[in-house]
Image (cartoon, rainbow, N blue to C red; front, top):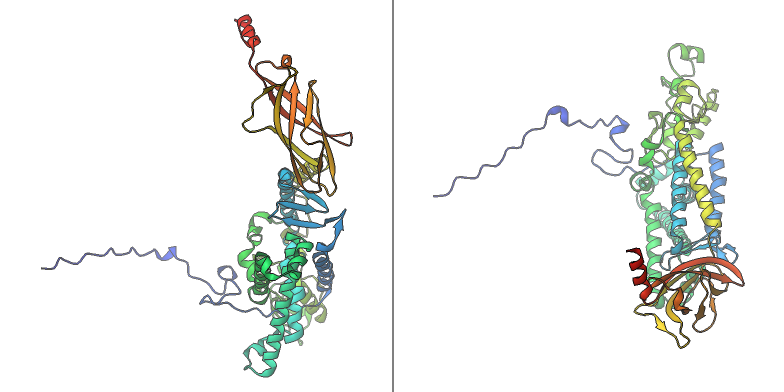
Length: 498
């Protein structure tokens, strides 16, 4: 006889109010770049033009020039910027930083992060739209190439829907070939910031089999940037970059952002040429004629009239599009403009809030700390430790000796001769093999023998202060301990104490 079938637990139905249905008419419930099935909605932003677009173009050319020329700029023989993580060597504005400068690196990072917080609190995501490398390269380089080859938004849309003719194949292949070549150039430029131009050119000119790891990184960088700019595009800002998601914690009602003046624009209504402006206002309509020009130029596909949104990168394309429409219908510009919520509701200008003051104080304190650390930073970093496994030795002249291992890091691009002197006691300090000369950006290691009169040693040890000199100039002091025998004086002291 078969056992009775096991009863399966019946799931408890969720309360109807616990699951909120998605309202696809509400922008808060979905992304503009995804449909109801989760498929991507490709964005075809219309080509923007206007005063802000011209300003962004000039800013982008400047930033692109800095980016591509940067690896070749030298300051005192050092690169403008080098982040060599493999060799743990970092160069910022020609100044070399080593892992020993970790405190300076940490403070620099804090200054950068707090600066972003303050800037975002005051001016929103202006960084994203105007200076972020992703936006600059996408909108000012790759997008413009796409406009040049495939035309404006409606032409691109028509081309993608058209059958695969010879013209379409040539345009698509040409565009993606240029995209890939540019990605290769960008990838190699950024790689130069990590390994230096000398190493990059050596990899390019030498036998590829000798640099498989370097070539692998070059190919990966190229594919990464090609994928971002050819396909991923605005998704990098929406899904990858965490900065946009911090907006809700950084922005307040006094933050200046790209904003729609709803008090002036509402209620929206199509412009009718036979209705005079006075009659339109009498009927309750605002200046927004619901033309959707601000939406068609948005590279992330949002409607700025819905308010500040995570996807908005403050690129100002919607401001130019709206200003153009306002000019045509003879209404004042600025229906969409840089403004704060209080600026639109109450007509207030940028106000310095207590939170902004607090952030600024923290930033100034960090900058002051950073300047102190940088300007008091030594050119060398020296450490001296007793040689592993060594004990004190009795010398023929009756002195005691300790053997040390000294390491000196040269942080500069020049040779530095190093001398050591005992600062707090009289004794003999001998560098094995003569004076130390540390090559540029290198680490020198040597042995040092220190001899002292046994009468100086109390309780079996003596703290030492050793001065580090270069060409007679005191650079820094290092501290170590001299070890000797525990003599009878220790017992005498103990008896006297008892």
